[in-house]
Length: 267
Image (tube, rainbow, N blue to C red):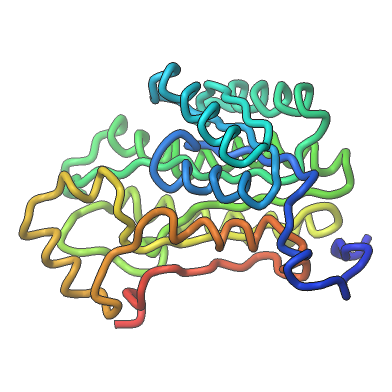
């Protein structure tokens, strides 16, 4: 089967970006980048399942209500653990049962820790990899089974510029390696699944999330000095990239990694 082509590739370009009628799911969708991905997909017309793990359930319910009212789309929240194959598989199955199918899955969950390499233990090494790499694998596998059955699907992986370069001054070998592995996994799936799904990555640079603002002042200033763009990005500045990848506007793109970093990886 050839790579999916929309029924009307000559339609108006803005129509190609429309996600009306699509069902999407986002892991790590209750905060940070994930929350803005959810918001962007809903604003473009998709119904969205928020998959979360550690966020307060009442707070997530409030977000579901807020975004539903703002966009007119159906949103639902699901608590799950991407580190566990059975957990995320059951969650994706439930989403398909509830919505009828699944068109777009964003494997966005991620964690990071500053640990000198010589001090890693089996547990601290696994803490990063179980979410950033294994979590992508189990999310992809759960989604891929439905994509194959449907004959069409779209997986988007949130990676990082840390997959391309080694960030300094922090020490995060596990994070860097897991993000690089996630990109190569996505590229492998893009080839293996070409008959029934597209698979692409987004690699953000420094984004204004809670994690960044808890860093020491000296470290924050060091990062700022290395960004040609002269600033960090708000998480909302990423949502358009995910809408693009989720839409038919890039129906011939698969296996790509889109870097969004204000020029950080260029220096």
